[in-house]
Image (cartoon, rainbow, N blue to C red; front, side):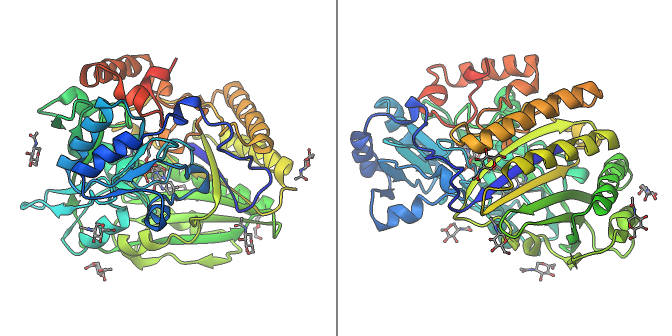
Length: 483
Ligand SMILES: Cc1cc2nc3c(=O)[nH]c(=O)nc-3n(C[C@H](O)[C@H](O)[C@H](O)COP(=O)(O)OP(=O)(O)OC[C@H]3O[C@@H](n4cnc5c(N)ncnc54)[C@H](O)[C@@H]3O)c2cc1C
Ligand SMILES: *[C@@H]1O[C@H](CO)[C@@H](O)[C@H](O)[C@H]1NC(C)=O
Ligand SMILES: *[C@@H]1O[C@H](CO)[C@@H](O)[C@H](O)[C@H]1NC(C)=O
Ligand SMILES: *[C@@H]1O[C@H](CO)[C@@H](O)[C@H](O)[C@H]1NC(C)=O
Ligand SMILES: *[C@@H]1O[C@H](CO)[C@@H](O)[C@H](O)[C@H]1NC(C)=O
Ligand SMILES: *[C@@H]1O[C@H](CO)[C@@H](O)[C@H](O)[C@H]1NC(C)=O
Ligand SMILES: *[C@@H]1O[C@H](CO)[C@@H](O)[C@H](O)[C@H]1NC(C)=O
Ligand SMILES: *[C@@H]1O[C@H](CO)[C@@H](O)[C@H](O)[C@H]1NC(C)=O
């Protein structure tokens, strides 16, 4: 069971100036020379001005830095050119696909070059319809829309504006995870621009070590430009939506039981997916629970959801016949323009662990409940054993948050410590830290276990002997910093 905490705030005093405490490597020297060289080779290089501000928008305001220029390659050859120029001149750079990581420095940079992959966004169905090829800069909504009505479906992000690149390289939880596992497990081939500027295709048949490393290893080995994802037959119709309840002791108990029971039984019905969101708003003082229900086929009989559907009272129930396109287009709940902080822990699926997590998280919320304009969300997300069959990582947890956010940090540091201690004491502790939900102070790569860490180090050294993606690209989780 993964528990993710996400805090959203507009003009919140608890959020210190995130730029103040950036690591020195992000504040590198000016990169004007690199930008000039890029100008000569690429169609689109953007410098400060109106286009720049639009290009530099990120989902979370915390992630918006001030690059010297923004390079927007339009094909793989331009990405390779850009990497050659940046490496030759030792210019610090950042890599951005969908830009949804809130951590400053992960997808943007000060006084360096941001490589923005938004135009690497082709969405192509193979002739035999067995796979789709997606440019990493595509959003999932764009991919689902372009490939709707093709008679096949494929796993990807649930919220349409997130990027193909980040989700896939970090693992990728999907509406179809119970059916086909992590998004990365469905990749047939990655196209990668290595630090040398060489382009390689990594698959089980070619560069198989790189192929495996990219399924969870994030940006440690090169810039991925293209992912080919296996499809499965689907008529395009699914069922799903959200059921909202007021959050009371009664509904909380019933929902946690439903989360627990669903996770235990998910393997019996792999078309079904479920997660549970607790949403607290300090402005209104309201607390709600919104369960997300999903079924991969539009059929009338879905007994696995009877338990969640029977919980009363309900504030809203939008579950209905729909499509992935419509579900992914529903992005209102986590809008652009706010400051976000997130962190994650993983623990075993027992009712005792769930109620312990709830108790600790509620208590931590109390310590920040006097901060105005805060939305404190936490999500229980099943990772039943059937995902783990496909999974890259073996369990683990540690919590942290962007350490520039003092009030919240201390609250969350206490959450982490308490969660770890409590889960250990009841035998529910898991080491896994899901990279795509992790705070910058967490160490998700280390949570993959020693053998995988050594493997990732080996692959990084083999494909990037100079360590370009360890040092010249300072953002993101680095295999060289696992410790
Ligand atoms: C609203 C919201 C909904 C989400 N929903 C889901 C979900 O349904 N399932 C899920 O698993 N996760 C989900 N996440 C988490 C998500 O997986 C991560 O935030 C992910 O990193 C976002 O990918 P991106 O391409 O948008 O981000 P970016 O910030 O652009 O990239 C993330 C990191 O990966 C690196 N990177 C990105 N692309 C490349 C590339 N092509 N080559 C090399 N390195 C690269 C970047 O440098 C950066 O460090 C969600 C996040 C948000 C904010
Ligand atoms: C790629 O993105 C551009 C700019 O957002 C958009 O105009 C174009 O339609 C997208 N291409 C595809 C194939 O979706
Ligand atoms: C997607 O395809 C489905 C199934 O054919 C159809 O019902 C739906 O209207 C399509 N949606 C869009 C946005 O094209
Ligand atoms: C990688 O695969 C693509 C698609 O099959 C192909 O067009 C490209 O030439 C390949 N690149 C290399 C370096 O083999
Ligand atoms: C919750 O409320 C329902 C109906 O209001 C009631 O039947 C049930 O016994 C309550 N459950 C608990 C655990 O309090
Ligand atoms: C738990 O889930 C199983 C399988 O879906 C179901 O048969 C059972 O009724 C559920 N338990 C409760 C208390 O609803
Ligand atoms: C909230 O209350 C805590 C003590 O419970 C206090 O330390 C903190 O300063 C308060 N924060 C705000 C914004 O009022
Ligand atoms: C809290 O709720 C109010 C009223 O619905 C809403 O305007 C506000 O945006 C919410 N706060 C956050 C941080 O979402």
